Length: 130
Image (cartoon, rainbow, N blue to C red; front, side):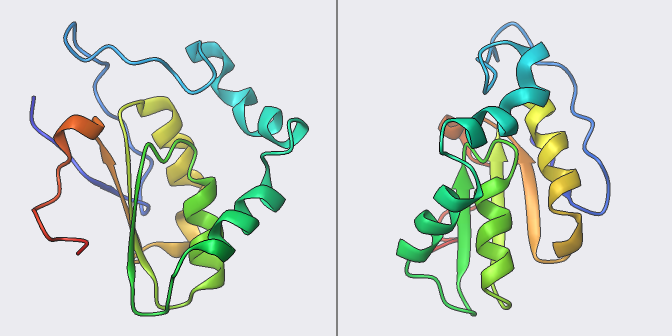
């Protein structure tokens, strides 16, 4: 299957996974996807946790970040919020969480691109984020 990329200027609408593209959704079941972020907050993995993770990354204003398995885009949002010149790419195989990520990341359009893809077949050229 070919890869498509989505910028955050539009909500992504990827085709459903094919028989060889089975995925396990972030919360274990597709119907739980809307509850993923609130569940992370309850478990202590919300914005405070993401802020701590981003603080440990060697990010600068001219760097690029690739988040493979970006889910709902929380980590990308935290990184983009704190680094004005940062450009980012998020990759996830689940179109449901990618749609949530696109809504969350709208304010950073032009600085982030989302890709519906599996980690085993990244749609980015070698060295794109070196």
